[in-house]
Amino acid sequence: RRAEEEARRQEELKAEEERLDQQREAQLDRERNRYIARIEAKVTRSWRPPEGAGRLAAVARVRVNREGRVLSVEVMESSGNPSFDSSLERAVLRASPLPVPDDDELFERNFREFNMKFSPRDM
Amino acid sequence: MTTRRITALILALALWPAAAGAVLTIEITDGVSGARPVAVVPFAHPEDVKPNTDIAEVVATDLARSGRFSPMDREELPARPQKGGEMDMDSWREADQDHVLVGQVDQGADGLVVRTQLMDPYREEQVFGYRFQVPQSGLRRLGHRLADRVYEEVLDRRGAFNTSMAYVRTEEESGDEPRYILAVADADGRNEQTILDSGEPLMSPAWSPDGRRLAYVSFEGGRPGVWVQTVTSGSRERIGPASESRSAPAFSPDGRYLAWTRQDGDNTDIYITDLERGGDPVRVTRHWAIDTEPAWLPGGDGLIFTSDRAGSPQLYEVELDDRARPVSNPERLTYEGNYNASADVAPDGRHVALVHRRNNDNGFRIAVLDREREGLEVVADTTMGESPSFAPNGDMILYAAERSGRGVLESVSSDGRARQRLGMDIGNVREPAWSPFDALTRN
Image 1 (cartoon, each protein chain N blue to C red):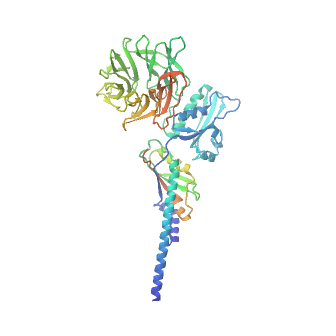
Image 2: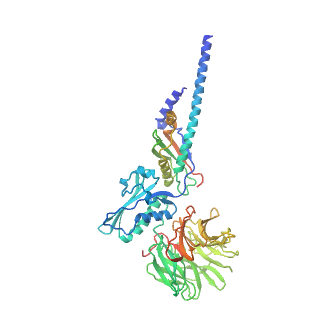
Image 3: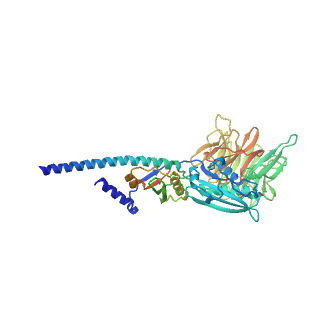
């Protein structure tokens, strides 16, 4: 009986822990999306794609410090067009410092280092 | 798994770039188009050195005129460094300047020495650095060349500031007969030189592709005739007999052929002369309507011309074979509006500048026809636009307009993004023709 009770309490504790984890994850998700949007907005304002960049796309790896200051921008997947590649590098540098979350865990998890994909929709 | 353990694992992943397969990716699909910020700092010079030209101003004016740059106002420059090494990059970033051009002028053993650097405050590096030795008289041209270099570095497109234009200026002094002056000047309207001065009308200057010759129409002898003249030497030659009325000359892109219009009684058609081999001209159009103003496609494989065969002036295209003989019936290109004329084809062959009048409207606007998208866009909303002419890089259009009864030249960015117009006050001028790259003039 006691053992059963103990098992049930353990179960409950575990469930509670999971619930808290999930809650925390959901909160992190919201926070993550908020910062994705903020970074997107700031970089969009500072990106000047070269003329005729229509169907080009490139991916850059961005590293920032804890304050969001851009430490490096490295083109991982080139568009094949040097002036397009350099326009995205410039866009990220110009947008520095980037908005980054206060939450240390979220920052370390997703924002100390992340990728940016640049693909103009219609230009 | 507890939160702490997740954190530990994520931290480990973050410290291990090779394992960071699931890195967050942020996607950017929009950017800003429009003029790029650039700061052109006045070039410094010692007190005893007196350059006759403000090089920085030449550069900034050129860049602004292109519509693709917005140079920072001088009064707002955060500092006036002479060298890239002296720059406080933070202050230029705060001023939102993508590029900063600095320079200085010194006395050299033989003329002036100009040193200049284009700096990138974001990357904190030099984009280019040059040292030039020039005489005073070369400073303005040096400014145009620098503007070209900035244009090329930043936009990855060839600049066309260090080019020329030809036009016809009319001088009318009271009581005297008017004089017609065919002139060539720098693309910013400076340094005019007279090519031909005549008491009879001059019209329709057209550059040879190598920029050494000009074809034009002269009414000397009472009848319009087509002439070809070498710009530097002044030697000239009439194309065809003096008994014929010819007009609207246009060199083929390889310089071998000259297309022109012949008016014979009521009929006006387009012909092509082989300038190398001579012989009889080839008749390109054969229609009772007026066919005129031929403009070559960049490949030399066709002409775009104006014809009123459908009742109002519209643009048509005729294909040519490799010996410049017509191989197709003309095909109509424009349908929008009741007047589309004076075509000039951009170097990309896709865009055609023209004079356009909408239905129910009196204004003659400058418009660009996009042959791929089949759209017509007005780029200069002038009321009396004439003679559009593309810059050799295709990025700008020069045209004539009328302001208070006088002919003035204006230019506009050819995509219509920057519709600013720049008047050049160089007298009563008409019929501008922008030169090719590397035109050979005396300037």
